[in-house]
Amino acid sequence: MPRKTTLPAHQARSRESLTRLVKATIEVLDKDGIEGATIPRIAARAGLSPGAVYRRFPDKDALMREVCLRVFESNYKHTKELVAVDRWKDKPLPEVARSVIALTLKGHRQHRGLLRALLFFIWQHPDAAFVRRCDEMEWKTFQDVADLLLTRRSEIRHPHPESAIRFAMLMVGIAAQGVLVLPPDPKDLSRLWPDVDAQLERELPRMFLRYLGVKE
Amino acid sequence: MPRKTTLPAHQARSRESLTRLVKATIEVLDKDGIEGATIPRIAARAGLSPGAVYRRFPDKDALMREVCLRVFESNYKHTKELVAVDRWKDKPLPEVARSVIALTLKGHRQHRGLLRALLFFIWQHPDAAFVRRCDEMEWKTFQDVADLLLTRRSEIRHPHPESAIRFAMLMVGIAAQGVLVLPPDPKDLSRLWPDVDAQLERELPRMFLRYLGVKE
DNA sequence: TGTACATCAGTGAACGCGCGTTCACTGATGTAC
DNA sequence: TGTACATCAGTGAACGCGCGTTCACTGATGTAC
Image (cartoon, rainbow over all chains, first blue to last red; front, top):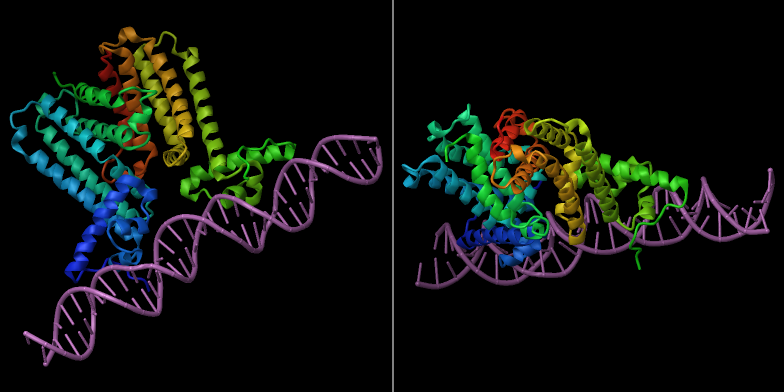
């Protein structure tokens, strides 16, 4: 009967190579995408042989899920710190919104390859419970940002500020994902659509604020 | 040396089974997704054996590309007819925009599985020339709709109506894709976000028109 | 502090599963006379 | 119109490639006395 869970690492050596394994997986995913992330390649990058992977993880899927959850968890914490910071004190909604959008775009641009690979992994994943966990983490991240923006609800003329903020944030997230993370790369699109990226950076805040009905 | 191109069908029987093959591929893609679309399954659905596929197509990739191009071509023609229809005569921009958005959403909802599968296929495709052809077809479809909306440019207060229309349409397309086509299915998301679909239908036109600066 | 033993960590060649692809063959269709 | 022959259409079992996974083995680390 195959082992179901990831084994704990008893020795220091093992803990180190587990760390290297996770790091290597992230790097390979970012560089070679989900289809280029084979066990031999990941193991080699971590300075291990393929067999060694199976000492820590019951199968490839468990390694990938671990990486997925770590990345999303880290992103969640990062966002939580960001919205808590008192940099936002006294700043009016347009300025906060602009910063939030700019940071969202920056994050998606920086981690394009990794995010793309993880999305593909989740989208093709058969285990509904795992997918739900990922969705929930993304949702919580989302909600934290929405809550920050909602503290300026008096500046919003849209009849339903709560749902409008959520909807506008959804659009920002989906746009960042659609334009910056998913294929085709903006550079390949530039023949048909020069500077989508710059337009996104400029027009997304405008759309956001106009939709909410904020005086600029 | 393997054959490079798809052979013509000399007999009526062959032409029929080619049609069945394309139809079967579309159905299997829509139902089972890209990873469920195996040659044996497609062939069986078309009432053929796996080997028969290779009489018309040099490999699986050629069959898939053919299907891709046919679907996008058909969508392009469909859109071209739609915008040309004089149903739009004398209708003000808000009404046209609402119809266009509603039709876009409807199309994405109806063909969710197929569109998802084709997107995954294109996104993973190594041949840049093929990907470019698909992008161009989508772009032309896009442009036709933008042109229709641009005939009402006097109603648009945004300083750059042309690029604003293109950007707003891009957002509509990406939103439809992100919410309706890509995982998770709206029904699975309903726990976290009840009625995204209805909200999309209601709020997308509002966002569209407010961004362009149209008097409602 | 040393030593013997148990357990853990890692190796890498070999295995096997799934699916695309081939190929020797049968049957169907078209064509020349 | 009938017949012989060439070509096309299709079959389905077998093949093979790639990648995840295993397993017999070596080496490293920790532990009991």
